[in-house]
Image (cartoon, rainbow, N blue to C red; front, top):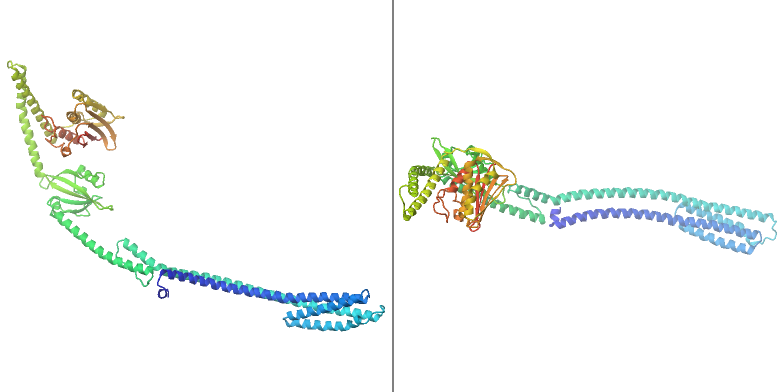
Length: 611
């Protein structure tokens, strides 16, 4: 009904209000009608019966006045006044009798008034001679009898007046019963209509609200399904109101979303396939893992190297057997490490040969999404590693072969310098001093190369012992105090507030820390400052060596721990192995090194060791 009559939501809601108001008006009109009936009944009762009662009361009063007039005439006290009073009362009686007759409605009341009129006229006939004939003989018994007879007639007439009273009283009782009946009927009728109006209003409101809300519920249901990813939703719309227009627009939007979704899915599938083809075309083994380190995708090269892997089932720890490498990857994927990391992964193939892979991995994340995946590339550096091993072995052999002749040369230079072989001229002494400097430089270089070779080949055995960090650093500072004073550098040690104990090799750890301190002294200009401090944190023991020297150029910052790398401004005689050896020693202690430096702002080295 409403669908055909009204085309706007506002008109429908207004219709609902109008229907409810009409029901309320109907109940109100019926209530007013019953109240009017009740009022008319009361008004009729009061108007009619009150007039009859007043008339009867006044007629009784007129009869009493007539009795008084007759008494004045009969007693001769004042016959003229008595006659005047009698006549006046007679006129009053007839007036109120006519008044009562005009107000009478019931047959009983009319019959009483007719009887009252007849008896009153008989009374007037009987007492007429008492008024017209003078009473010159008061002892006349005949006149006394007439007077008594008149009094009796008046008593009968009063009885009729009282009967008129009773008739009106009975009528009032009957009217009261009728009014009560009308009141009960009106009350029950009004109650019934009120309940009926409430029920109709509730039923209409419920049906009407469902009629209004149904399209909104359909729209809400469709929106929820869309939010769940189901875009195949259409709202049936038969209305032309605002909700119908909204449903039409919604259906139009759904059509566009479906087309957009298909387009996006095709793009996603295209990008996914393109990524898979790119990964497959990479010669290096590649895999992708999720936040739980479950393997999501591998390429053919990876399966060829490590065997067939079932994506979505295989976990990364089933492939990466090296615990430190696995933990590093896990820390990176979980977000604990933000920088792109590289690790050297060593594995033995099926033929028993050692293979070396450099692991490069990075996070793949989507904006405004909790999805985190990591891509890991296994770059095969076995050939380069073998060449590096051969180079290290070659350098170590050459250095070892040079050690014996260098020792002989050192002894010969010492003999010559001491004058044992004969007196030397000043020119010869200068040449001998230059030879000694070259010998010291070559000796240090050979010593560093042999030391590094021993560390890399695992030829050294660390003697771990428990030691207190403040004591270790004080000893290191004491070793370099003289060297810093010669260069007028303020070397400061800031011990930790608490005693911190670590387990380490005293000799090698002293050499590693000493390399950093000596490096700072070497580059810090005259009058500079070097500070050594230690602190216990969550990660472990942090030993900090900071200076206010010239700093390190950014192009060397990532290479200072590589072999034979010398930063700009290094003094002659340095071969660039000190920091390399120090890093190898810290690695053997399961520690790490971080460097912060900017040109002109000094450098800070942080050594982290497990407590």
